[in-house]
Image 1 (cartoon, rainbow, N blue to C red):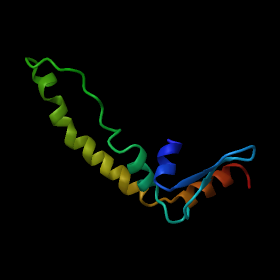
Image 2 (cartoon, helix red, strand yellow):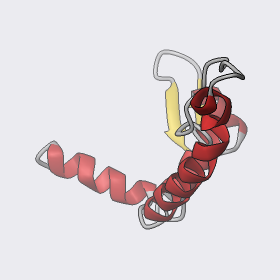
Image 3 (tube, one colour):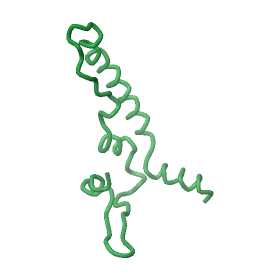
Length: 98
């Protein structure tokens, strides 16, 4: 995950005893939607097992459910669009009592 974020410029790494990862972007400008698309897009849709082509349900469940999961993912992305990394940082600080 961290290498993916670094590759896309969201974080930078520093080697050494005081090394680690730091944000390399303005947290107020990066939405959770961006992070979701980068790291998890398509993950809501389950992996359907190899169906029995003779079974009405098994042979058609994936096609029947694809649109439902696609719509659910779109709603999740729309929701995530209303939050930024700065919002998450603020919530973390609130939880920590800062």
